[in-house]
Length: 311
Length: 273
Image 1 (cartoon, rainbow over the protein chains, first blue to last red):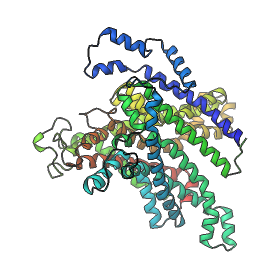
Image 2: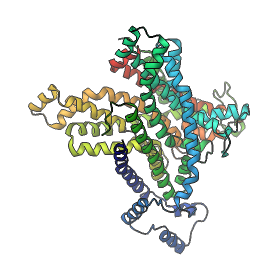
Image 3: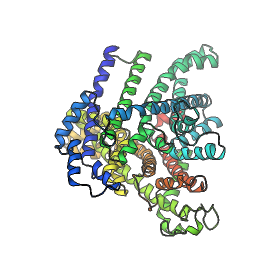
Image 4: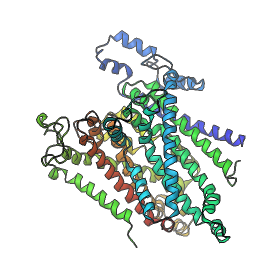
């Protein structure tokens, strides 16, 4: 098992390297540098000496390949570079944003699981029923909703009209602030989980071992809990993991809408200010999060289902 | 064959949106950009302004109609680019195998690891806002599923008798891929494309909402929501209707995609029944 984890970790490196390369190349051909965006902020007609000085301070006067080499060398030492804007190490800019993002993703996922899995389960027990049709219509609607629009509507109803919850912002210990963004973010994974759970349960219900168990005279509730649940668990866990892995990337619009101080809003802000080192850093964090979660899913998968070869 | 509800309802919604987009010029009672009148700003829905007016007194109904043009262009064109890239890469990777297959697989994994919205945001930052940039940004970032399906289907057809026969008959590789393999994988590629149109419409809205998509004053459902966000307290209709338009469009294409899949994949059909 350890060897499996080790191998999967090694496999992440080429992917990550390719991502760094792509992002680096994209942002070196960007028209308008951080320095020109400073000028756009009203400090126009900057002194040529100042521009030259800034360029050399950030190493922008070096050729592309040298800069790429420097960046990769830094990455190998877990150094993401220096933010153009705050002149701090990029990691210091990203680090305080991590926990709010993770907290939001966890809460959204919790909502998705608590609502989505039971719905899918119940729908599958009576396929074709009104409840089933209704649940599946709701699921496909959940997957078609623009989540920031849902966020906006939630804000209007629960914050502005009813006044039950704050409309945006973040307070470290506050549960109230997380409810609306988490629901808005959690609706699409919830819908997907409901669909997957339903498909999984239906698949298992038609499997031979369930027919055998039923023929043996097992009561329906026992059948569902003893045989079906365990077999659906693997499928649900996989979907859950994959969704959770991509949630940090999906959250950017929700974070921007609710002024949530996470990785996503940091990405949007640094794209607009052309703070390239921070953009690269946040993208790397988002991708790494996805890859690590995926690896954990694979490991969990191998642990749950002995039929999957570990070697 | 029994027509499924998904297929019929989805197709209906999609057709309504397409017709609305094409006929926007004739249906829209006002000009979406020029007919701004501060005297009637933030008016609730009425007979004069079916869906109300926004902060500049522009007719929300007209703007939603014109916004459909942007959303559908982005959805259809970018998904066509995605489907083409995915199919060409996937089929050739499956057909030739070897180092090319490894390379395509590696690239697909990289594309899957970067969330497409993040990738598109990065490309938009480079290219600047506007419709052509959107088509490129969304057209280059969502082909991995098409590629995977195209590759695995090609693998399953590659060694079948009709392909072998074409080989023996002296068909060139390109010819075999085009005439023997491509027609057989069009079904699944079409299903993914239909679902992909929905995600492209959502992505356009998200990018425009973040201010890197379509720039105002040109109406797009995404940037209408950015503008109306400030008015949510006083003019909620300016937020409700553009979002509803996105929802209906995406729902239409998603249902259509689901319906097509059920129709093309008998296994799924029996399972769902």
